Length: 229
Ligand SMILES: Nc1nc2c(ncn2[C@@H]2O[C@H](COP(=O)(O)OP(=O)(O)O)[C@@H](OP(=O)(O)OP(=O)(O)O)[C@H]2O)c(=O)[nH]1
Image: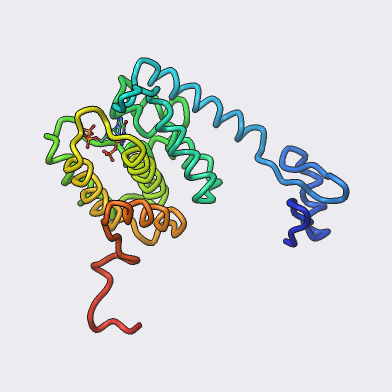
């Protein structure tokens, strides 16, 4: 696919195929401009509305008490804008990722509204609130390497958004030591996610470096002294 003046000029064969899919593209000066299916966009907006209603009474912990929905929107935006993610189910998973953990939403409700794939992503990124704080934090580290690729993407973007938020403005009552403890814990979770999306991982690496936390460039367990370069 050759790129020209910000849009893609498709080979004739692909252009002809797309002519039968007017929902996916329109032609502008001979160039095919690819768009998401209107169905995908409607689905994303419906998901955003669902998440907004579910989080409507919640605020973030920052001193300004910003609306909670800013976080799921931020996570989805990171995936699309920085991670190059176009899988609608992953973007839906990002928008919904805290609904079951932090609101009265059930996984069955997610499945009824948005299907089994989105349910699975949300389930994989939901902490078990029945566990103690320390158990939950340990469980996230232990589980990270074993969740699906889609859930790993959401977890990477979730951590990136929270870490950036912490640099911007710590939650009320958080000491610098607590902020650093969160960075060090997040590093252990992210180590289990490495190799999923290099752009997101590099962005996390840069944010962590601001606090002197060094994220390795590959999973430490895969780096062995005797492994060839
Ligand atoms: N940085 C930041 N975090 C805030 C803010 N408001 C709410 N949070 C949420 O607080 C959580 C981190 O705080 P902790 O004390 O470590 O954890 P806890 O809320 O789960 O008990 C994150 O939950 P989470 O999304 O479930 O993620 P995770 O930390 O469990 O991965 C984050 O989204 C804020 O203003 N800034």
